[in-house]
Each structure stands twice: as C-alpha cells, then as structure tokens.
Image (cartoon, rainbow, N blue to C red; front, side, top):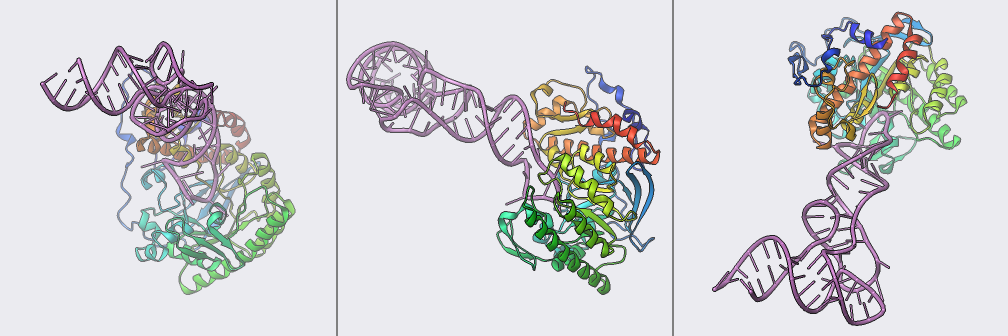
Length: 432
RNA sequence: UCCGCGGUAGCUCAGUGGUAGAGCGUUCGACUGUUAAUCGAAUGGUCGUAGGUUCGAAUCCUACCCGCGGAG
C-alpha cells in the first residue's frame, strides 16, 4: 500500500513527517519551518565544481529485477543516479519556478538541460567561461543535456534539415544558427554535461514510413558523427571518461525500423541508449507496444532512457518493461498550468469545486506544500495568476514524481513491483 | 434650471441605417527530450425606457429616466 510505504521510505535529505491527520478543516493553517523552500544551503566547499573524483569513469550497475522492472545505479563522478530515475527538466538552466535546493530535496539525482536553448542564451562559450553549467546554476549533481534534436521537431517552423545538420532561426532574435552533431557535442562539452545525447532528428507522428526511415537513418549517421566528436573531445581534454554519450533509437512505431536503429547503435558500443521519438502523437497504448518491442534489442547492462516521457501511467508501464531513466516537462509545466499530481489522482486546481475546500492538496505527499496550503488557497492563487501558485504546484508535482520513482525502486528492491503497480496505478491515474 | 457628453455581455469598451463584436471575467479542456506563468472551447446582450421615421434602427427623430462634466 503506497499510503504506508510512502511514509516509511528512508531518504537521505528528507525528514518524513506523519501529517495525514492534519486534515481538520477548522484548524488554522500552519506554515511550519519544514516548508521552507530553502531548507539547507548547499555546501559551500567545492560548490559547483567537479568533486575530486572517487570514480573516474561512467558506469551502470544493474542491482535487481522484478518482473520486467529493473533497479540499478548509474555511477558518475558527480554522484550516483538511482534508477529508475526521473530527471526534472531544466531546459534553460532552471527547473522553472523551483529553487535547485527544492529539486535536490525532492530527491532528484540528475537534471536535464538543453543544448539549443543554452547555446542561444546565455551561450555555451559564456557558460564555459563562467565555470560550466553546474556551477552556473548551482547544481552539483549530474546533468544530462539534450542535443537539440527535439527542437528539430518542436521548432520545425524555423529550421531546415540537411545531411550536415539543422539550420535554426533563433526563436529569441531571429539570428541564424547551425546545429550539427559536432557542434551539438561541442556545446554539451562546454556546458559540462555528464550525460550527453547524440544529435538526432525527432519527427512527429503519425508520419509516412519512408519519412520515419529517412529520419532514423539520418539519426544513425548523426550518431556516428556525434560519437567521433565526443571521442575527439575526450582525447583533447574537452570531456572526461566520467562523462558519457548516449545514442537515441528512432524509427517511430515501426518495429523493424526500431530494431534496425537499435542494432546499429548497439554496434557502436555506447555507454547508454535512449528511446526517442515516442509520446509524440501515437497514444499511450501504441507507445507501450513499441517500447515493449524495442527494449529487448538493447543491451541489458546499459541504462535505457525513454526520452520526454511522461504521465504517471507512462512511467509505471515503462518501468515495468525495463526503462531506467525518464525526463518530462509534465510535472513542472502542468503545475504552472494549475494541475496537481497526487496519490489520489490528478487535480485541476483551477476548477471551481476547490474554491472553498480547506483540505490539503495531498496528505500522502512528502512535499510540505502539499500538506500546508489548502486547495482553496492554491485555487485562488491560480485563478489570480499569482506566481506562488505555479511555484507551489511545480514543487508538489516535482516531489510527487520523485516519490513515485522512490516507491518503484523500493518495490523492485523488495521484489513486489507487480503488486505495487496493481495497487497504485488505479489511484494515481484517477481524475479527481 | 440650462448646455454638453454618455447609457451596448458580469466589467471596460468597439460598432453611425442591413436584424450585434472584442478584451477581460466566468466555466471547462489541452499540455509528454519546454518557442508554453501558455493555448483552446464554451458561456454570455429584447443595444436605458417609450414612441416615431424607414422595406429595415444599437445607429436617424422626439420625450422621459439614469450617470458624468460645465454654466447659473
């Protein structure tokens, strides 16, 4: 039962308080010190710098399997990444509306940043000059950077694809920029990303098979170039062996194309593999079906990262099939847009029914804000367009996602993942 | 009391002869490697009242009511 297990988890940086009884409606709301968004300052010593390496190389330990689900740990010089892991998205060097301290205390081991956005502003060379992305944004744990491949799709109106790469027109000032596999890797090295992604072409679905195949084959050639560029960076000191380059399997929902893509990437012997180009319009069932057919084509002893996914349902079903890493804007974006992910389902805090509801948002959450602020108050903040509403919901959702991953890891460790899933899935996928 | 301006959707206002629109609000929805504190949909008005002119009036005319400003 997750209600119980969520309260019995032992987490390094979290004081777990039992507050489920606080639901008394007439009681005045208390704002206890535990809810401070700035709980403890980051250690000043070595802040933002690479810790003197305990482990110089990147690695992955597969600890246990339960059904198809895997428990593991990615080892990096900046610390371990417990898997299955969810990476909060910090595209422009910030997880929107949250302090890095809150993201850390939520339990995140790694963040995602973005090549395209940071290259345009403030600029990769500038970040390098200032000491790297970790120091810049005060996040000393690992960072994974996306290569800009997703922007090939999301910014399709202002770009052109050639064999060489993607020519973008900046969405900020209209200036022209070329993103090639070589430049993408260079930028990711300048940022100091611990895990770097190959440059790829992500396309929207549905799409013609020929188009899917063309983008997949192009992405394979770009993977080769990305690897050569990354190896050259390691050779010249622009990157270390503690950093890693992941390949991205493409191929839409076409299984033979997915297999062809996976096979070619596996032959390149990369330290990790992502499944890209999913959750781009095909629907949950099709995505899971494609994933089920794709994952077995990847090596067991390397981390598997499902890019850009997803809903709690997506995460649970994907972990059940052996995915180790995720990232998604959903907890933060939907938080800014008024939704709360809770252990009893999805809440639209803008709905009128919350206007006079003094109960907490989620008494099963380990996020202080989920206990402290009433639904009525958060409803008011969202209706008023107040920033604090977005901050509170982003916080609650970020904690929810991490707590979800914690519970999954715990369940795998205790070899009860299927039972856990049967219990939790119907509740977290409900709409309240 | 006189003069002027104005009364159109819950609010602020467009619409000057062909049977009403916008923004905001309200309600609901969407969002999956963030161009997103964003976007979409629905809701909503016998056009101050009563007459008149006209084939046709929110629009022109008359009276009255209400508001604001000015004069006395």
